[in-house]
Image (cartoon, rainbow, N blue to C red; front, side, top):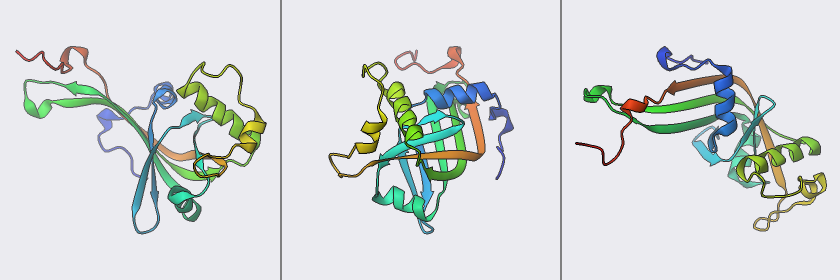
Length: 178
């Protein structure tokens, strides 16, 4: 794997990376069927040093992963534009993490239930008064596709992070141009 070319932007702060992956809301799963790239935005959780996501059985994404489990997962958040009197020095404040690994179906019911509970806690905290039961996960069928929920994990074998921090005094504010 290549390392980050622009070393000034590299983030090696593991706590910052962990927090970013735990709090960001959308990741992009990159796949390849051998001929074409295929990228899918999805909700995810970062726990146990892995990315987890879920979806219905079947479909193009699952077929590609079945044939080629090597994937790329990217999370990026843009915080705004950093202004500068020199146009070429205008920049974007952001953080991004790219990881590479093998997507695997989670087969243990307890792990799947824990992951799905973590997703509910992340995306709809406090909405349900009771924890998710293993029986619910085991029996759940999509009302649209009629298929069971499938949970996947990606344990990174390579991970990089970059950032261009917010510079509060330089951040562009619409309607503040003199």
